[in-house]
Length: 389
Ligand code: ADP
Ligand code: MG
Picture 1 (cartoon, rainbow, N blue to C red):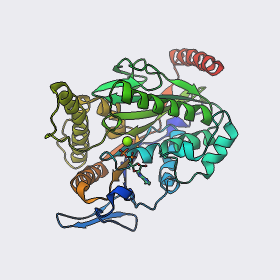
Picture 2: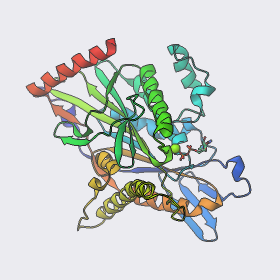
Picture 3: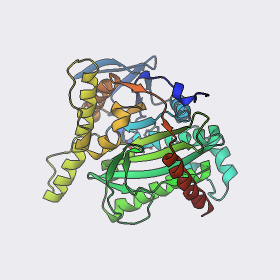
């Protein structure tokens, strides 16, 4: 009997890739700059009285490096997702350091003057846009450009705020909080999270915009600060039929814009409810820090430390991306001004730890049992129905 290609996929060791990106100085910061030098695109160099350091990363981008150039480091991983590898790209850093710019981009939809009803113009425009579109639209573009027949793509978009998970693709002004579950076949997933079937670039980008719009609306109606929430835009890729070896391929791309990593100002007077809210938000980033720290220690030590994935929603959802079967890329964004130097140093500390983490990765394949195939057909019917809507 012929062996399935996927079965041959061997285990590979792969370190988490960490990229540091220094954003340009903003007008209002003139006169308060902190010189963050980059050396051969590999080192970050800071020589500022209290902070003297030279650290190595997978790649360091200064303020002149364009979104398109940066995406060149990401695109090979996106192509791996089509071969069944789970992939995560996330942005970490304090508020205002350029995370959303890196992941989503700034103003690119306006600068392109796109007409949403006009698909081809949109695609051409995205191709020539070098500066504005971030990693998420570029990932979507690359995915659909390289997608061959026989794949299904599903898209979801969620936000974690105050340890509650909300669906950004449901247009309720005050949405219901969703729960995390785990199953053998699906792994860790969010129950009732909408998964839209998408079969082209245009539909997928439209969903991304819809989620961004909901994020903005809720910022007002629920008084929910976007810099204090995490968002995950997720693409699920599946082969539509089992291959000759009876294998189905399934992979996930997580694109994550994390909440601002800065410490909360304790001097600020605030209500108890507000304080609790801020505590739980901060706790998720503290947990993320602990997870990264313990994983990086475990790479060196024989006595393994426990990893507190379950202590926060974001680490639970990214469990596989941090310590499991995922090709993970982390952008650590930093701002080049003097009053943020402590936060910059903290972000770089996080970045150094993340660099120590090695993962064992393998393409995902599922043995297509009869039940799997029945589920597959049911899903296929749903998929086709959705496309007709
Ligand atoms: P964060 O999401 O980390 O809070 P933003 O992405 O919103 O930060 O960035 C803060 C500001 O800096 C925005 O006005 C954004 O457009 C600008 N910015 C960030 N990074 C860059 C960059 N590489 N090039 C140009 N402008 C940038
Ligand atoms: Mg942001």
